Image (cartoon, rainbow, N blue to C red; front, top):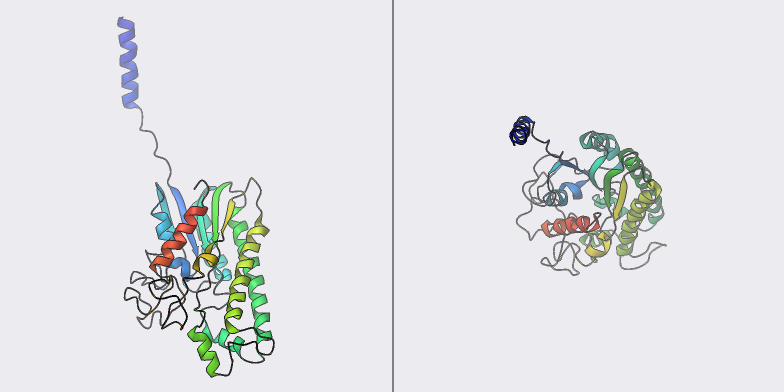
Length: 303
């Protein structure tokens, strides 16, 4: 009996002296991309040069993750080339080992969607062929650069997950952009000199961007020793009836209450706080960012 007591006492002492078990390392999440990922204009929290908002979809995704660290590298104005040079290397170092989560939303700036004159010119008689060549070059650049980014982030990282969102068409079906082009003689409602109606030009451009994004994911095709790459490809369809609202962004539906795109009626936005953002009708509003977060979460492994 004395021997048993001594052994029990010894075990108790050794247990008391043993160092506490190490806490599990936090799961690291890094967000990459452009103004959609940074939350440009969605609320007044986006005040730095990158227009990063706490209402952006990466922040909403992060809020659902337990025991995680979050690094937001998304920055307004980023192209695929800038993402490669300014974000990908930092992301890989922040992730550290071969695990973690990366989200990417990129490509709109390669297509110059935020530059109205690129598309107004495309709508004008005789200039559509030049625009198509620009669009083809942009699509090739997006596919090549994004595939390179996936390779750098994913090669030899079997526990890492990379989620790449596709893009939405934000433009009202009767956008003020088309009205501007009409004043310059574009006749946007009809086919002109081989150019489809203007709304179809925009739709084809978004389709070309999404084809390039999905092509880059297919090009990556990692093995079991590499990161899992997932395309979040429901974005375009989900936003299709939630485009920029009337009356300020165009004359067609949806209404402000139905839209997922920023517009002047929403006093919470900073898009009309010059000189930071100016007019919008392009970036997701708070509801749009919430919907993007939901799409990412639904596409996650095991969801």
